[in-house]
Image 1 (cartoon, helix red, strand yellow):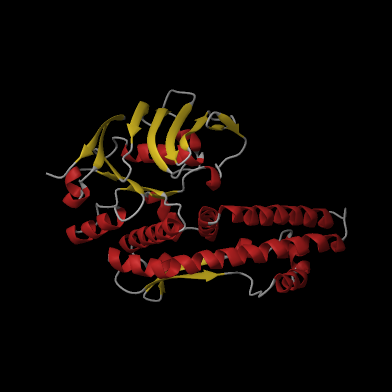
Image 2: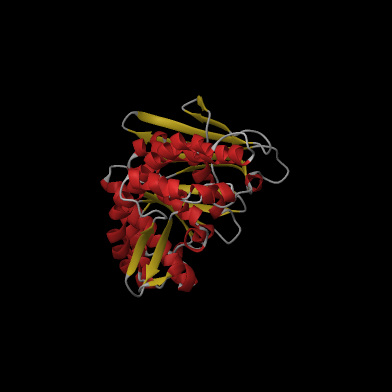
Length: 369
């Protein structure tokens, strides 16, 4: 599925904008603060009903306005589809696909084109809490194998029920034995989730090392899955839960299982989270996103890549290598403060959009001189 167009109203510093995207590469240029990143965020919001930059979604509504609205048109073999999200702070999001109202956000992977995003805020994926990395790999699983998204949902429901039951037991309104069926459900869904995470990372890890080298990380790059449980079966996980039941009752919540997993990104055997420089962390995040893009291309679901200011800290050689990666598969939207920052080989058959103070002007079909 290719994204053809994004239309936005009262989003960040935009009153209105209507921007066409090229099938391969769209380059968005403009000075700092003009609205390049806001346009990229709007595409992400229109496709997922979430922001890729902030948890305070009020920030997306243009100053002095009550409501923001984003519509994204995309095309696949069945025709053209429209994804729309309206947001008014304090109200439920209004989400529709092809005019039919949707009841949940984010929009399910199976209903929309996959989207991969690099913005500075996403460095928290490397520097931040384990929950961010767990969520990221679970979104990747849903993109590669949409049917497996239910595994994470089943685990989350069982975990919530178990934690609620622990609270009832602590309050004297139930007995510890009432945990038995939920321990069985949690172990079944939990072990399946661990297997899904391991399978997804098996696909990504060798490609991550390759892309990291191409982007210029000095040393061997690796990703290590660090599950909280060492279970080799659902039965083993059930035994672990039973052994830790007294501790869970003392704490008041479930302290063991894949909701405590983590991923370790390493460079030359050292944690990028703890020892990597800002530049190394940026390069590692790019390598991870391109490795995941390779896996999704192989699965027949190439993502739209949204890449914000990825050229600014690279030398000419690395910029050229990065452009080669961008153009090697799928669709991409790339921002840059100046068109001159983008290597000439990227300029063939692209859409160029220039942004000035929340006004976007585009031209299709540019070719290198």
